[in-house]
Image 1 (cartoon, each protein chain N blue to C red):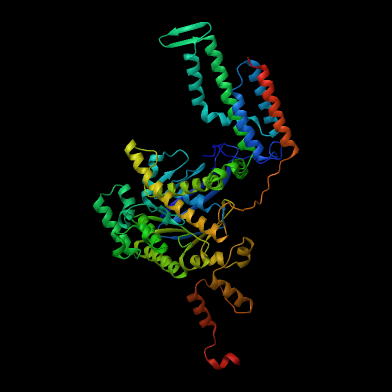
Image 2 (image 1 turned 180 degrees about the horizontal axis):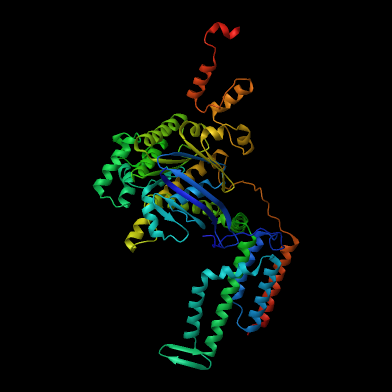
Length: 264
Length: 293
């Protein structure tokens, strides 16, 4: 479980760490959109250079980003293979039934791979340099306009931050209960499928019970301290838009311009 | 001397071989006699829980070995062999009520014996017996364990461990979160099990009074190693040493230590109220008149 990189924050004082989470969130999404503008070597090289620059600026070793790719590697390979075998056009190298390998297909495969890696690096950069609380605060203020059409933005942000907060707690709880049931003779991960499914019950029921109890305690504690929804609530962590954030946005606008210029 | 547990040069490292590796136990060697009542004391993070988890194979040693109830365990031991060991070692975790999950109290208590190969009928017989033993009224056996009070839930969980009919009972702060009355009843119940069924008991606790009242052996842990392995009399006879390691005295002993400072000549510091009363009675002058004389 320690290998889980999702939502894992690495403390740091870099330029990227200090950017406004609203800007980081928005630009990460924007990056995913403009990755799809790339359609030739020049554009991909430009995007890759940008990402490497951000990685460098974040002061986090490249290894952490590569680890972020690992859990998705099968999905990526599957998509790449689809591209390679089913693309048409260009010179045909190999042909069998519905499968064709063409030079165009191979190039597309490489492009799809690059696209995945770029997107994963960028979203890993977001979670590595932004605390979960900052992300949910940022999301809350980005979504704020939606309150006008009755979207419960505050509640969504609260749910998100509570969920993120309790991931480690729940993992600890799982280990404890697994140990207790092991001591009572349950063998997790052994025996046939039916046995394994059955062995999950003594784990899941106590987990549900303790989660509900915890939720109730949390609700009581919040009410006791006067929580009554997001309306009129002020924040301890003020988000501040600085010069660097504006510069980052300008950089991305320039990047978009360059991509449109370079693409075929 | 019959040894129930024999631990030799046990080392344990969490996440061994990764950058996050953390040493939890260093060269722990320890023997525990069959039928003894051993208390393990020490601060949070001193390695108590890690040591306990070795006793029923939840963790395997990084190096060194241990023999528990005739099962020899090293880093090479296969997971399948550990099941046999777990049958003999009952483990009451901290806040054990978190392990309850069945529809009825009786079924929950019968869960462990069923896992260890008893038939449904046999298991429920044992379960009913253990429910009485821990002081649960028959009327609750068919209700859901989640309808009970906190204290009763804990009894159900403990009965669920006892139903395995273990030779060794490991208790990790079994009275945490109970009121004083519940605490006393619980400790008396373990004492009764110890006396009547000759269970080997290993108790982890922060309550020095419990150590003084029940244990016949004390192990003190610090930073993953043993710093004392002796009798309660010995360990509690040196308040300065205990103070140095940030450990307290039992109430009675603390009181006697104060008396000793005032000049009351104790040969050894008494551990229990009864011992203290007897000592004081001995030291008292026979007739009332001489007291002021």
